[in-house]
Image 1 (cartoon, helix red, strand yellow):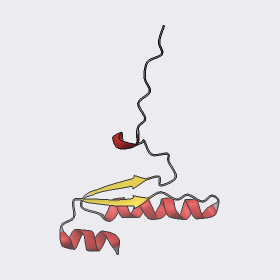
Image 2 (tube, one colour):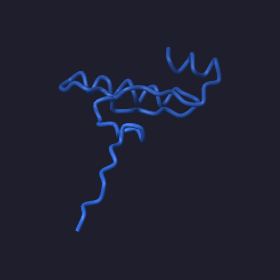
Image 3 (cartoon, one colour):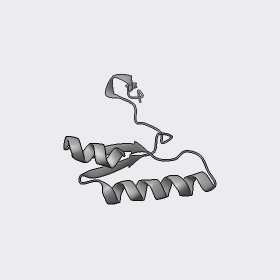
Length: 68
């Protein structure tokens, strides 16, 4: 269904989240992801939403150099 819609609208990339739970449901999600990649005409990007994100430049804290 997702691949069909993406193909119909001419999407070049589909972005989906990776499974964050364990057990048998991960295998089911992996199977679904493989099927999506097989059916989509464009790219499929699978991201891990649980992965730590880098700080944005505005959130980075600059520390002054230590005096000798």
